[in-house]
Length: 163
Image (cartoon, rainbow, N blue to C red):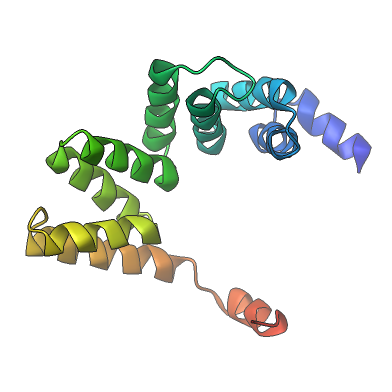
């Protein structure tokens, strides 16, 4: 196992780098986490980009920096990370740019992000989202959820006890 992991690091596998970074992040080793996550982010890994935004937001192993936080959030969102996209939507909403917030939430919802769909629902109730846009996001969300379904996953779900 160690040999395989070493080969993946040497090959600059973004997934292996991200997972090493996440491990250090959650263990509180932020300096080491930053090294791995920055390398994976440079290779285009969206989740690593989002973790870097969190590090800059909280000053975890780096100095707090709103510009770098925003940079990495945007990079992650552009790379397809729905949590980063939702986070940008929240930031836009906090700044009163509801039209931009709605766009971020719609994109994230169409990627299957449940929280973004809930936020859109609330914004629809408040009149910030049109019926057509909400319906389109709902259809897109359902399509994303359906795309993750498979007979193998359903069988695996039966094996995992719930509650």
